[in-house]
Structure formats: C-alpha cells, structure tokens
Image 1 (cartoon, one colour):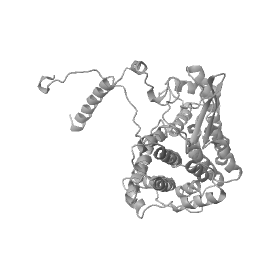
Image 2 (tube, helix red, strand yellow):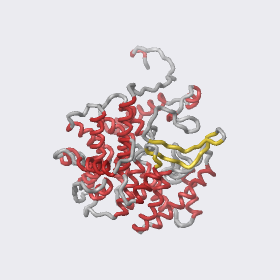
Image 3 (cartoon, helix red, strand yellow):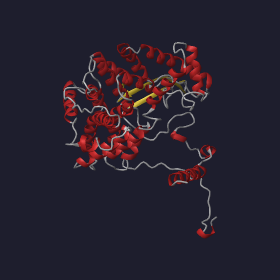
Image 4 (tube, one colour):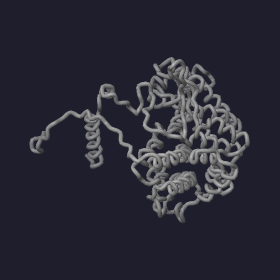
Length: 453
C-alpha cells in the first residue's frame, strides 16, 4: 500500500469516527427548544438585533394573524422598487446613490451625490505594484478566496488598519466598496491568463464612469459595452447590496465586528460566508440546473416535458439528486421576492438585445410552473416563488461575465450593506455577540492510556 493510499484510508476512518461521535439526535433540538439555523418551526428567524438599514417583509397582519403577502424590501425606509424606478426614469445609474442612502441614511442631494461619486472615483486605485505582487501571485479559480486574500493584504498598506473609530471605518469602507470590483475583475484576468492561457490585459477604471460601467470596461478586452448592459448590471448591484441583518454574511459581519476586530478582517469573514453555495453561490446552481435541463429535455417548448423534469428534480431523479429546484424559495419571502420582480422586467429587454429570447421563455416557463409543482409535491408551510438568484445568473451570462465572477459580483454589491451594518454594530453595541449552546454530551470517565483497548 502506498503512503498516499494509507493516508487516505486513515483520514477516511477518522472521518467516520467524527461522524459517529458528533451526530446529534434531531429530537433533542425539539426537547431543548433549540431553533436550528436560528429559525423557528415556521421558518421565521430568531430576533438577534435591531437595525435601521433595511427592512424585509413577507407577511401582513389580518384579523390578528400573520399571513403571507407579496415581498417588500426597503432601504432606509424607502421601497427598493421606488428607488429603482427613480433612477431608471431619469436614465441614471443607481449604485452610487443607493450606496449613499445605505451608509448615511438619506437620499443625497445632487451636490452630495456628485461629491460622493468623486470620492468613490478617487478611491478606485490600488497600492503600487499590488496587482503584480498580490493579485497575480498564486492565482486560482476560486475568486472569493483570492478576494479575501487581497482584502486582508490591503490591511498591510493601511497605517490605521486596527482603528475602529467610525470616521476611520467609514474611510476604509468607502475604499473597499471602490476597489472590490477591481480586485474581482483583475483576479479573474490573472486566473484566465495563467491557468487558461488567455491574453492578459489590465484596464484602469475611469473616474467619470459609474461602478457598473467600470466593471464592464475593465472586464472586456475592447472596453466596450451597451447602455442597456450597464443599466442592467447597475440594477443587479443595487438589488444585491443589502438584505437585512439576518442574512448569513451580514450576520457574520455583526458577529465579527462585535469582537472589536478591524474592517479588513470583518469584510473578509463576510466574504467567506457569502462564498457558500447556500448563500452567494446559488445563482451558479441555477445555471447548472438549466444546462442539465437542456441536455435532458428533448423539447424545451413543451410545458409537459419541462414539468416532468421539474418533478424529477424534486424526486431526486435529476441533476444533482438533492431534491431541489434551484432559484425557488427563500428564507423570508413566500409569495414573491421583490428583487426578482423588479429584475425580470429588464431581463426580457436584455434577452431581446442578445438574441436569447428562447432562453428567456424557458426561464419564464419554469417561473410559472415550478411553484405549482412544488405546492403539489411538497408539504410547505408557506408559499414559494422564484428568488433573485433565479434570474441573476442568466443576466450575468448574457453580459458575458464568466461564472467565476458571479459570486464576486454579489460581493461587490453586498459590501455596501456589510459596511453599513459594521458601523451600526460598532456604534450601538458594546458586547461581543455570544449565543449559548446546550450540551447534550454524555458523561464518561477518564481511562488511563494503558487500560484503553
């Protein structure tokens, strides 16, 4: 037996020991009134804090009872649908305006927005030789790990990295909001060059362009993009930038910030949370599911065949055999995800521009059929609808974004929410977040080594 085979067997045996000795009887959670995933039996999150940054609603009170309703998302009290309609009607980009709103609590005046845009533009720069010495060293396919490394390394260039005064944290936050898109795109180009043997090009951002426009400019060899492409990417960034304090990565930001750690560490921790396929990686699973559907359904225009495939997904007979229709359902929303509703209005426009209407019609069909099929096949405590991840991967594919950048684009948006919540935690809390766990371990006596068998 080779050393490698022997080591593999050792780890296999040890893993079995871990599984056997760490398994907890699920009935004990009920016995001790422990809410798994910090959600009660109805799926409602345990209240862990207060926030003024955003509001997520999916129920309303009727005759003293909470019933599901169309989902709503508010940024600092403003309906996100109204916010998006506002800048779209005026044919403006909205990311910078929404960022100002989340960080400072009110919509900016024209003068304030112009000043803030200049501040973001001035911060779109990396330390000298950073791209060469950090981003291009040990590049790999996992852009989220590369992003985390880049952010932690930026702390080395900050004389006041550990200072948690709000003025300093705000400075660091605005810098990270400005450079994370650069880190993501440059990391991809490095990976694409060194691992895929493609041409390497690094375009500098332009001060007079928005965040979305600069992402497309930096990503593409010819630096070109259409107004509709920039508008829809900008909308995607706005819809992804914040979603309450309870989502996993934002709660991570609160937990880590409560320890008194620095901004770079807190944002890196949030990135590590977002990386998980149950959080920021969900849109990739949607894309993979549709690719599998195209390989296994002979007529994608036939609703019966598509419905049969969706049932196979639920019965663990198709795709990854997990029993899930990806892009359907949400921890909070039931009847509708407002982000998906807003997004869908523009997805069709982009599909028409890109010649992808057949794909759009397939997505629209699944959007209609899947909730009905889930309701027929599963006992669910609330309604189910498509979420924002259902369409975001499709949009990114039409924009020519490589799959490796899907989750980093989520991070480029959500860092705004993380930054606002970090400052909220530092301003309002002086206690480290420390929930308790109930021990269900059985007592055992210590046995001397020579007596163990």
